Amino acid sequence: MAGLTESIRNIWKIEELRTRILYTLGLLIVYRFGTYVTLPGVDATTLAEVNAADTSTDIFGFLDMFVGGAFSQAGIFALGIMPYITASIIIQLMGAVVPYFQKLQREGEEGRRKITQLTRYGTVGITALQSIGYTINLQYGATGSAIVIGSTFFMISTVVVLTAGTVFVMWLGERISEDGIGNGISLIIMIGIIAFFPQALINEFQLNVSGTGGNLFIFLMEIGVWILVTGGVVLVSQGVRRIPVQYAKRVVGRKVYGGTTQYLPLRVNAAGVMPIIFAQSIMFIPSTVASFFPDSAFMQQLGAWFSDISGWGYSTVFFFICVFFTYFYTAIAVNPKEMADTMKRQGGFIPGIRPGKQTSEFIDNILTRITLPGSIFLGFVAILPAFAMQAGVSQGFAMFYGGTSLLILVQVTLDTLQQIESHLLMRHYDGFMKGSRVRGRRV
View 1: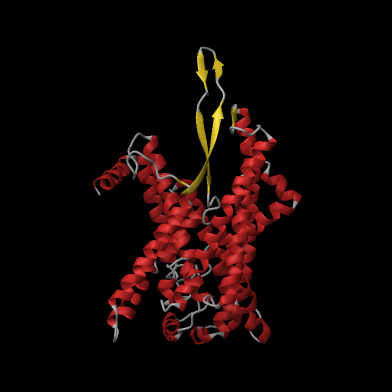
View 2 (view 1 turned 180 degrees about the vertical axis):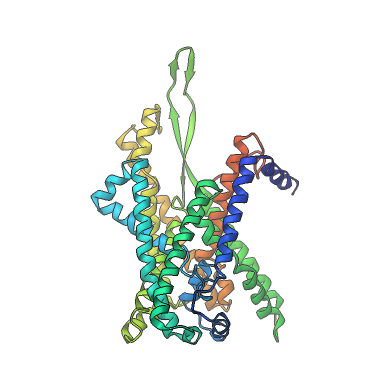
C-alpha cells in the first residue's frame, strides 16, 4: 500500500502526466453528462416508467451497458462509439482484400491519415443508418408513448442529433488518445461499463441476501468465482511466449556492440480487446436490420434470435466470431516478415533458424500456435455470461462475469497502467510494481 501511495504521489509530480490525466478525466466527465441529455421530443418521465416496467433481457440491454445507459434513456449519445468500431472493422476488412486500402496501409503516416478520414466518413454513414433503426424502435416499440412530437419531425431530428452525438463522442476519443492518457475509444466504452457495476452488485446482493430465504454464501461464492475469472483474464492478457534472439558482435569505432541474448515477446493474446469489440459489433447488426422491418415476422424472429444473449445459438455464433477476429486482428497487428527483416538488419538471429524467410516462418508458426489457446479462451470468456445467467445470476451482474465487459475493463485498465508506467520510468520514478514493470508473464 505504501508503494502504491508513493507511485500516485509521483504521478502528480510530473506536470505533463498530471495534465494528461486531468484532461482525460475532464473529457470522460463531459461524455457522462451527455448520456443524461434526452433526445428532443422524448418525455423522459414517461420513458423512465416504461423502462422500469420492462423486464426483458435482450441485446438492447447489453448495448445499453456499452453507452453508459444512454440507449435506454434515449440520450443524445444513445449509439455511443459503436458505429465508429463498426466502420473500423469494415475498413480493416477491406484492407485485407482491396488493393487501394492495402496501398494506403503501406504509405505510412500519410496512408494512416487517409484511412482515419475514411473511417470517420464511414462512421457518419453507419450512424445515420443505425439511428433510423433506433428511431423506428422508439416509435413503434413499448417506448412509443414517450414520443410527444410528430413522427416525421421526430425521425429527422433524432437522426441528426444521434449522428452529431456519435461524431462528438468519436472526437472525444481521438482527443483523449492524442492529448490524454490511454486509448480514448476504449476508455469511453470502459467508463460506460463501469457506470453499471455498482448498481449491478447492489442488485445481486439484494437478490441473494435481502430477499426471503436469502443465502449470503451463494453471493460470496459468486464474488469468488468472479475474482477467479478476472484473475484468469489478467493472466492470459499478460501471458507471453519469449523467443531467444542472439545478436552478433559488431565493432563500431572502438566500441563493441551485440554479443548478447535478448528475447522477442509474443503475446498469447496479441490482439488485445479489439476482437471481442469487433465481434460484438457484428452481433448488433441483425437486430439493427430487423428494426427496419417491424411488420416482417421473419425479420422479427431473426432479430429476437440474435437478441437472446443467454441462448445457445447466440453464444455459439459469438464464440466462433471471437475466434475468427482474434486470428484476423493478430494477423494485422503482428507482422512476422517485418519482425524478421528488422532482426536481420540489426544483426540478430534465432538460434538454429536462418535469418530472413525461415525466421519469418518460424515466428508465424509460433504465433499461430499460441493464438489458438488464446482465441479459444477469449471466445469462452465472451460467452461466460450466458452460463452465469443459466446458473441463476442476474443479467446485470452476469455481464461482469466475463464477456465483453470484463475483457474491456481488464485490458483497458492494463493498457492505461502501462502508459502511466512508461511515463514514470522514463523520468526515473518507480512504477506501480517496484523492481519490475507491468509486463507480460512467461508461458
